[in-house]
Amino acid sequence: MATSPPGARKRRGLVPALGLAAMIVSMMQTLVVPVLGMIQNDLDTTTAEVSWVTTATLLSAAVFTPLFGRFGDQYGTKPTLVGVLVLMIAGSVLAAATSSLVLLILARVLQGAATAIFPLALTVLRQEVEPARLPGAMSLVSGTLAFGSGLALAGAGLLTQGADPDYHRVFWLATALAVVALAAVLVAVPASGKRTGGRTDWLGAAALALMLVQLLLPISQGHAWGWTSAPTLALFAGAAVTTVAWVVIERTVREPMVDMRMFVHRPVLFSNIAGLLVGFALFFLFIGVSYLVQTPADIAGYGFGASVLQASVVYLLPAALVSLVGSQFGGTLVRRIGAPGTLAASACLGLIGFAWLALARDSTPSVIAAGALVGLAASFGYAAMPALIVMGVPPHQTGIANGINSISRSAGSAIGSAAITSLLASQTIDALPPGVPALPTDSRYTLSFALAGLAFALVLLAAMALTTSRFPSRPSSVPGAAEPTAEGAPVMSPGGAPRAEALP
Image (cartoon, rainbow, N blue to C red; front, side):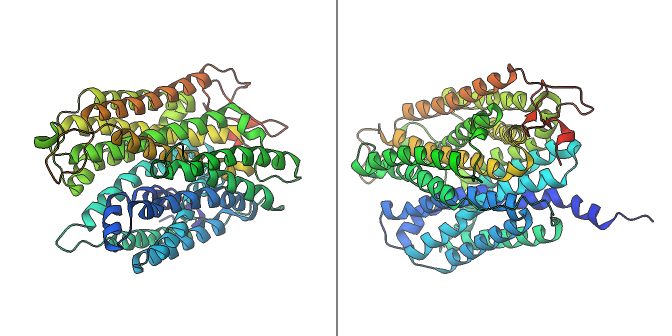
């Protein structure tokens, strides 16, 4: 009986291995959301202090993701990917073993490095997968992002049930999954000889990291500090000044960390805008639906009185499962109607889903169905964004470009989390029974879901701007393909997908 060569066997397991690794990226963002109150009580700390458990990961991702993306381009994706997973495992073990807030925050900094896994995984796919299969492979790996978010919420809910709940179990789950992902990467990902080498732009990396920290820190802490407080305004002003300094640095150094021309290339620009908006809207789904369904209807006049576990498993997990199934078809859509068309489909589904939540959320099936539409929207959006990135940058900048796109999604998630928290707290029900915490009025949920729908409407405008653009093209044997010009800039087909023969 004929057998496949070793390389073929490795490539057969490549997409599942990278999908598992990428799933951890989104898990790290939502893993602690259901257990923050438990961590606060167990460690006897304040709400402001425990919020650093989430903020630390966000800031760490902002610092490490572009740097590791660049390392992957320079020194090889597999060793960089393995190194990131080792850091993530170390952080997960520390978080699972400690009962100190300081050490837990340090652990979350190490876990934040996981965000770099996704752009590195896409770089591996661009290097190792044949062009005809590339859109589907990218879609499958991208689809694990939305699935991982829902899985983390459900897993945290399941692991903290019982008479003696313990949040440490959540971090042991993260450790186990990361170890499995590391083993899969070591076995399935081939060592690539494609490395750009060159110097690391440490000054540019430091300026980018400082700018992102100054931007994301007040976004994540603004609700606690006050949006017009001196620290918040000072950090936003510092971010603006540092952005100018970073642009000057990148335009003057010989080997910049980021080619600034990449940002103004339309596919990359609109992909980053879409990433920001989809990340924003998804956190409106996670937080809004979670709070909504846990509200007791006999007190507030709305809600379902669900437990934390029911909110995660019954109401949010279906959206994650639908997104995983939808990722099977995202690559097909990219091939058939192009990345802009797929992004437009994502926007329409998200807009319908949030309109449904805003107008008809009075039954469990209605909330679940609307959430499923948003989950499907996320899977199609995440399938389109990597394809837009691929058409916008040459192969040696894939890692850093997708790293920036990952940061845009993280920034959108941070903004969405802060925005919906502020909205729900801005108008509460009067005359609640003694001992009942403040509850938002029902109209706050309507406004929140309408705002998330508006975010998807803006994604639709971005997709339409790309769809109606005219890109230079020439005949190709593969529909929806792109090839680099002599200057290294990719040429796109009218459908907006990259020409396959240009992809290594």
